[in-house]
Image 1: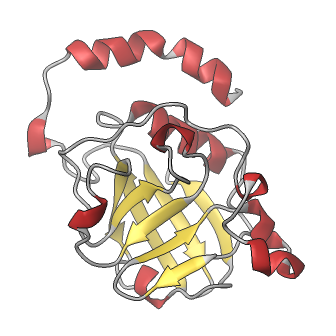
Image 2 (image 1 turned 90 degrees about the horizontal axis):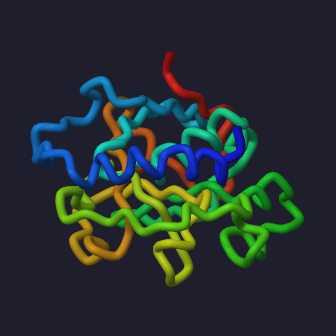
Length: 186
């Protein structure tokens, strides 16, 4: 199913979520939420998603995962004590390394369209969030994992997941490391 069609189909769900009681901090990573597994040349890590907090963002990323969008990409940003980032299809081409992570071609071409930023989800170690180039509603396919507490990012980016397995893998990743496969745990 195309992502834009999904948005139309879930408009009622989003309205229902807005009216539903907030689950507070009781929604824990891995509590029945979809789990995304990221296999890299340096090991595997998995993150639980937060569909109650960021339903469109989660479904957008899950649709990209189902389409195998992330398979074969490379890490294009890795800063010790800050973040590791991937999601630029240009990274499949080593000759384009100078533009990895930048420009219109550095995304799927179909942004989420809303900024699902919540104060409930902080940038603590292992937080998974959507990168953007200035407009959170234009976030598309680039995902980052925070490596330390980064409160300076809170309120600016949509945190939609939390690493729940392989926490030691993201800090080991470097620019150019291959992401061999990304899938949703059955």
